[in-house]
Amino acid sequence: MANKVGTCPCCSRHTRLTFHHLIPKKMHRRTYFKKHYTKEQLQAGVNICRQCHSGIHRFYDEMTLAKQLHSLCLLQADEQLSTFFNWVSKQRVKV
Image 1 (cartoon, rainbow, N blue to C red):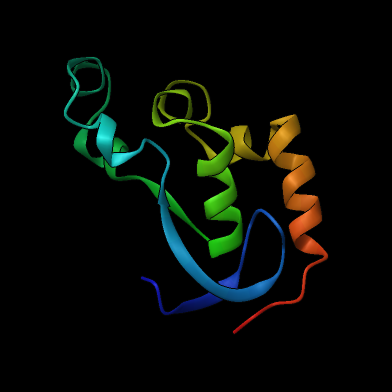
Image 2: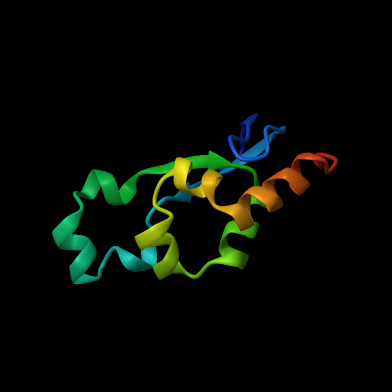
């Protein structure tokens, strides 16, 4: 997945993309997530650029991401991340 090239849905830049699990893998073994989500839902994710991916994990811990920001729409709607994605969109793409 790391070599995939496309448009990042967060910053709209055309660059290499990485796979971001919408529910972080660290949470998959916890009982709450095993009971409330199917294996397919736990494996769901989006391809985003490395800069946006790093930013998401810099701003929020795994539990917050899993419980509150578990979809692309929720990530894009978050005020702090939206500001960050806007900043990233103006950065030069390093390929």
